[in-house]
Amino acid sequence: MSTIEGVPEDIAHVDLDEMRAILDLDASLYPVEALYGAAFAFIDRCYVFLDRPEPTRFRLVVTPKTLEGGEAALRTIVGEIANELVTAAWRHQITQENRARIESVTLQAIAGAMGPPTLDDLEEFDFTDEAFEDPLGIAMSWEQKYAKKGEEE
Image (cartoon, rainbow, N blue to C red; front, side, top):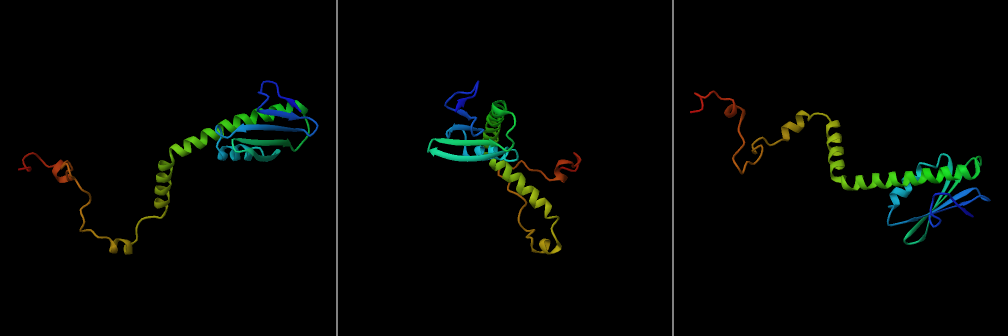
């Protein structure tokens, strides 16, 4: 096995006999979802094997489906996978931070797709309740807001 130029030895190795690249990744840096996302991006042109040799490490073994290009092709694939891992980890973090917003927008989209209420829905609706509470007393009806000054009194 040989190392890849520009990549730390403890992270990536190239096995030219088997034409595969082996990446050992720190599990604290990359969530498993990011690893799956990055691996999925390569399954069209590589055979991908995921492993967890230790609780704190992931191993990603990538073998190109076409064996052209030798070490240069493997170096390119390792670079692309490294970029995809960072991208997938970033997407995962953004998704986690905005989960409530994403769920709210999705719920609104689904509710909007249901269409307007039917007459049966309106028949069951209780119109006697107040529209909303106004504990500060700042809400105004349209009539109050746009009434002519002489009519207010």
